Image (cartoon, rainbow, N blue to C red):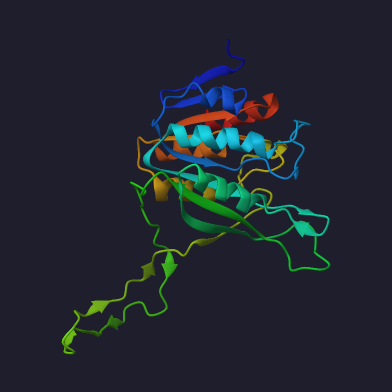
Length: 267
């Protein structure tokens, strides 16, 4: 007997209100192209007084995500660490290493750099980033690099030569440097009120990640028509981005009030 509720929005979005482990258990193996989520971690938010998300809880979700992910699929895991008794918790690293233990690759360790911070630190530098781990099941089947990094030498001709095994030099072809190159793996994303999203009602959720972040990760690692899942849907940022970018979406959220926000945004 299931304890979750299912809601279909259009042909390509399915929302579940219930426990992620239970819902994931109903999803066929090797059926999801991408996971994009930010899990609860280190009791940094109370989320309407939900019980603490333990490492054992995490492992049960991670096992299911690895199962439902297709070969070549990726998991984008946006996570940070709390400072507890003067020490960073290390939760992010612990989770990353567990994904590796269960057979996934740590394909990339990306940084999501925020444009601001809540409170000044008194004995350390200001904390303005979270990790965006990219885990893959084998080699990623899709990578659509975003090229918006301005090249300082745009328009110049790139010349050079290559030394052969016998010591001779072979001229390389001349290439004009383009105006923009591929991004680095550090992304600076605007955050804050009406920057994370322009959906004013969504700020009832205490910890959304920005729509721009979701959109750019979806563009990078999936194609139109792919299936993307967010097992901690929250305010529905991943679902809204999927709707905009023509991806199929499966979202899971336990809290009723957050589920209603997500339903409105995805609709």
